[in-house]
Length: 154
Length: 154
DNA sequence: CGGTATTGTTCAGTGCACCGACGAATACGA
DNA sequence: TCGTATTCGTCGGTGCACTGAACAATACCG
Image 1 (tube, protein in one colour):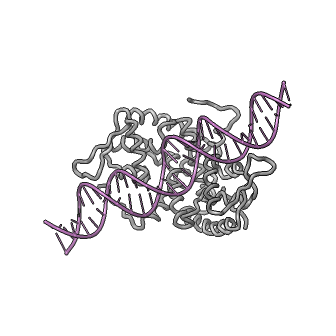
Image 2: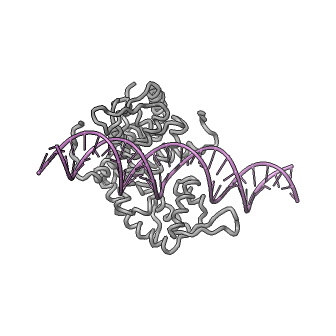
Image 3: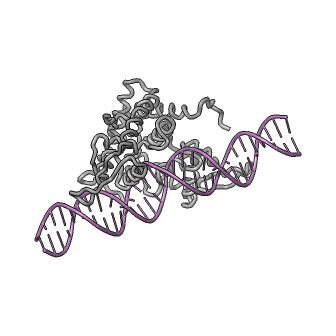
């Protein structure tokens, strides 16, 4: 009967947080490259030559979503995909010069944006903020792929 | 240039948190009704007869998105929209009996899910968790609406 | 060696989320 | 009162995100 208070629902808060971030990103970082796209660029700067699935794993996207993101980055000339001669199932991914330049530019802006985004928190609070979110997210991901599914309500 | 560490990027963490929640919701609450849809039901339980825009404001969705969500709920027979006789621009929204029943059922399951989701945190940490996220989200939203006075509800 | 399983990618379908533009209804000001 | 503003809802376009199914290449096993 009574309605719940959404401000104590972590899911609702998570959505609002992500939306707030999305909007700030759009105004302070880029209107063309999105945050997930940047995450992919960032991963390929660190580890060139990864295949799609692994990149998806690194940034936390499933195979379908990562395929779309990579396709967009490819269309914009920021990365190349080449069939792996050793294993014909995979595509090896590698940033173009343009991709590297874009990554460098956005890295600077992203740092600036994070300052603004986290401005309401003290340095100590930021540490706690990261820690708490990470712990909750990690634990929930752990529930996904256990050897033994605890309960499978269907 | 060196790649950034995504685990200190609030946007990346926010996305991972929301994804983790989405997955848990799907297995523990409902595969048909999503978390945003539940938020709409919840709002209409508390305040029947709201118009679309206001519901969107309550749950933090823009006009386009709230229109789609409401259209889906209407298609499933969970709510009715009636043109406001006082103001022909709006639709007044109201849950059906089925909608109320669904809300009640999901409220129980949502509470259970939140327990699991927040299990990694102590009660004190949960309070901090809510507080920090709320402050960051509120501040970022504040950046959007320059000097919005805390206007009285109409 | 051949048949089956696994793995990487793609495709179709659903849903959330934003923006900008548009039409209809209403509110406001000259 | 009439014309302009604003407001509510819709529509089209883009992009993220998941599931389940299909397909091809490779790996494994009898």
